[in-house]
Amino acid sequence: MSAASIPGASTYATAPTRSITTGGVSYAYRELGPKGGVPVVFFVHLAGNLDNWDPQIIDAVAKEHHVLTFNNRGIGASTGMVPGTVEAMADDAADFIRALGFEKVDIFGFSLGGMVAQALVGKHPDLVRKLVLAGTGPRGGKGMDKVARVTYFDVLRAALVRADPKEFLFFNRSAAGKQAAKEFITRIRERTAGRDRPVRIQAFRTQLKAIRNWGRAEPADLSAINHPTLIANGDHDRMVPSILSKDLHRRIAGSELVIYPDSGHGGIFQFHQQFIPAAVEFLKR
Image (cartoon, rainbow, N blue to C red; front, side):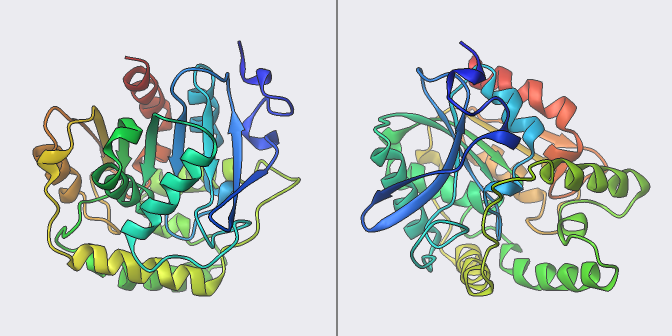
C-alpha cells in the first residue's frame, strides 16, 4: 500500500487539508501514507502551521507510515485560542489524537513541538509508542527562556533583508547554512494551492510566553520516559541551546542522539539526506 492509498494525497505538497472537531475545537490536519499500524503525528514548531513541514521528511516517512500533521488549538486554520502553557497544548494534542480514534501513536516533535511531545508523554504516557525530539529541550532547561529574545532579534534581521525569519532562526549564517536555508524555504513553498492560514501575532506571542515559562519551570523528571526516543539537533542551535539535546539524551534512558555539524536549530532540515534514513529506520525498528 502506498501513500496514494489515502485519496487525494500522493505527496505532502498535494495532501488535502481536513478538519475534525472535538471539545469545541476544530483541528486542521493533513494526512499521508498507508493507513494501518501505528501512525506518526508531527508536532510543529513555534509560529509554524501545516505548511512549515519539510516535504522531504514527510514524504519519506509516509512511504511506510500513516503520517499526520496538525495545527494545535488557535494555530493556522484550527479554531480556538492558543493555550498559555505547554502542558495545556499537550492535552489538546491528546484530544486531537483520540478524536481520530488512535490508541497509540509515534510522535515527531520539532522545537516547541518537542516540548509538547514531552509534556504529552508525561501526562498521557499510554498514548505514545516512540518519540522523535528535534531541536528541543527539557522543561527547566538552562537558556531556554531566552528564546523570545533570539526570535525577535532574528525576525528583525530577516525583515531588514526581506528574508524568511527561518533563514536566520533555523540555520547558521555560514555559506553552507545560507545555501541550506534557501533550499529549505524553496521546499516548504512547493505547495501552491490550499495553503494554511498564517499564524496570528497574538498566537505567536502566547506560544513564546509558554516556551519561556517552560524554560523557567521546575525541571521535569525525564527518568519517567521509558519510550524509545531519537534526539536530533545541530551543533550550534541558538534558539534551544544544543547542550539541551545532550541533556535530554543523558536523562532519557536508552535514547539515541544525533548532532549534525556546522548547523543550527534546523539541523534536521539542513542534513535531511542523512536524517531521513535515521528517522525512518528508528520508526521502523
